[in-house]
Amino acid sequence: MPIKSFEVVTKKREQIVDITKQVEKIVKDSGIKQGICFVFVPHATAAVIINENYDAAVCDDILTFLKQHIPQGVWKHDAIDNNADSHIKSSLLGVSQVIPVENGKLMLGTWQGIGLVELDGPRRRKVIVVITKIE
Image (cartoon, rainbow, N blue to C red; front, side, top):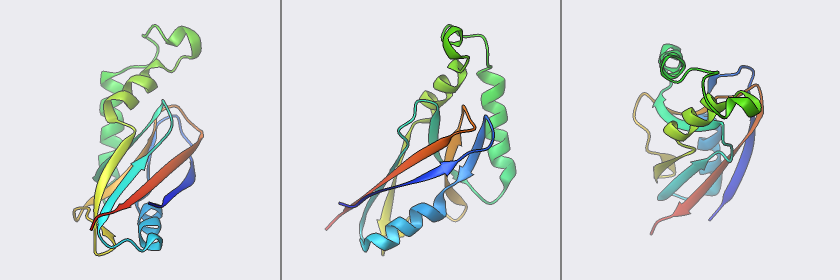
């Protein structure tokens, strides 16, 4: 079961970075033809999503929705480091995704991509990818 990782450097407090190509390369390099790809970020203020990666407006809309419904600066944890909204958003979106692998390729839909969601940047984020073979 290959376990690989890579880093993503984010430039904004909140942004979505398309990491599909990096994950696809890891899947290809693994040589696994049928299996499961698990993508995980070991961070309390980041997340991983699967959604449209063709139109950047989708990512903007997701971030706008999160900002409108989970505002910054009104939570108890903000007394410590003013990022409680980031923790809440990460918890709701989730820190991992699972994608089937068939014929050595991710089984993403036509318009789907994998996004690292930065919620408290800019930062250097680690992405862990685990690929398991299925017989």
